Image (cartoon, rainbow, N blue to C red; front, side, top):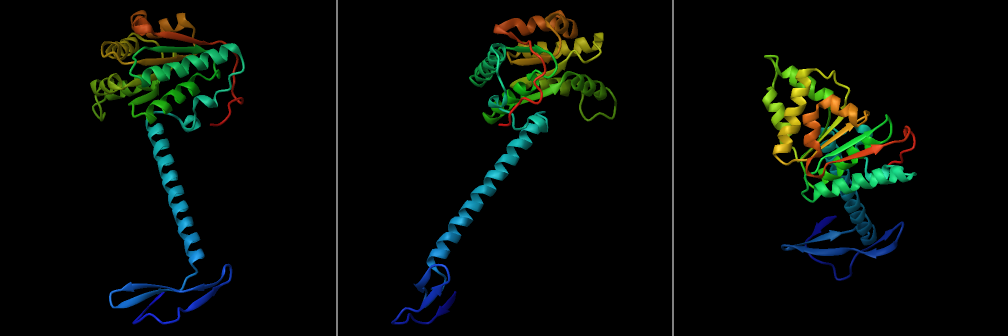
Length: 258
């Protein structure tokens, strides 16, 4: 690439090792001319490569942004790529549970506010499907979070210390105002009177605001009622709330990646 004072009568030429002979290109630049002595086919290929590289970079950056957003919403790295297609549904019960979860995510995405309880043994895919819900709803701009009930109780108790950055009111308000709150590991907390009051305040606050809540537990219906209290469970049954049973053995090792 160079500048010349005037365009030659006979165009200069070059030879590309890959594409053979080619003529130089001349472009006016004020009183002078800019000479391109690069093979035009090589230049076109380089431009396409740069465009593809730029598109791939933007795609990587967008994927990283999505994953970061999911992690901030409480989705663990194990499930950050989870989608409903990741769930291996081989039996009628598994297909039914998957269908219920997909329908629920669609319901919430459409502005619905029904609640959902996912109950079943360890390793049956409850948390993975819940994370698939969260991932889908986050992509539609919803404010969603999945969090262990024990972590909620711990954070609130930590807020009682004078050094806490957030107050109990701050934590409960944030949870109450989410478009969807998914509470995992229900029944793993101690079940003290204080914990039951905190759980009820969160579920009742969301009930009054007509905002949907999902509960995930390894307990059966009776155990869940004991873990969160009859009043809180009664709130979850309102507005068409459903209980989806995961009545099969552990599926760990059977899930396919998205």
